[in-house]
Image 1 (spheres, helix red, strand yellow):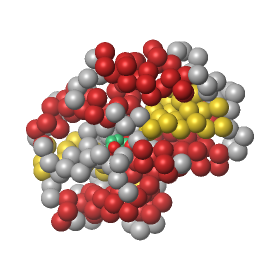
Image 2 (cartoon, rainbow, N blue to C red):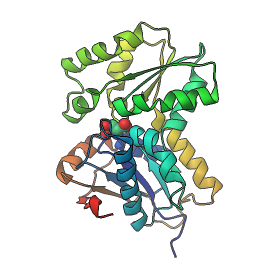
Image 3 (cartoon, rainbow, N blue to C red):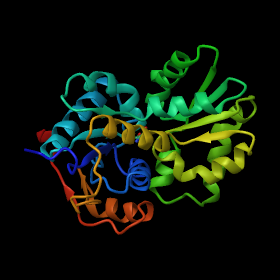
Length: 273
Ligand code: DGL
């Protein structure tokens, strides 16, 4: 039988972006083993319909279960917003998303009860961040804005390029002219643009990265269920990476995000799950 403590945590995303969440888990829970799946063949999710995102998420969860994971983190904001409710009752395993932890962090951060959210088209259209934030505090005003070009800019290595500054200004000008005092980076890729977004938005606005709170929630969940890996088995921090396509491109990108050398990345035929 699977040992609940040493079993890995499954983390998945539409591609490379969820590595920002895996990185945060590795910082806060260094003893946990991780199986990461990036759906590189079908990225982006941010322009797809809810039914498709649910179907993709179900397939990935079925795959991760074959790796005997003890819990699953949906690192993708789009899948968290559109698929978490559907999958969490369907599978007999704890599943966490990033929207609730990110929303809670923003509710705690705002003083003037005005919060901005940036994310993919699908996340923004779902209105899920607004729903969850206002469920926690109905007096908070939420302004959401889709910034679809941020994802390819990060993926193509344009993080430091001037064109990125122009795109940030293009998308965030209207957000900056409001009086929000907290803004959620509601997409896995956006924390990789954090310093440029921070420079443009100014330091009066608290920038919230849901990855941080998600790792904290995962810690609580594992402890409450007596599933936390305390490292006594001597088997800690074993990471494996799976993708649905372009393994070498993924591995190279992952090496720029993770604080250690990413080992061989395996390709999975995810449509078969
Ligand atoms: N991982 C997605 C998210 O956090 C961004 C990339 C995509 O559109 O698939 O929303």
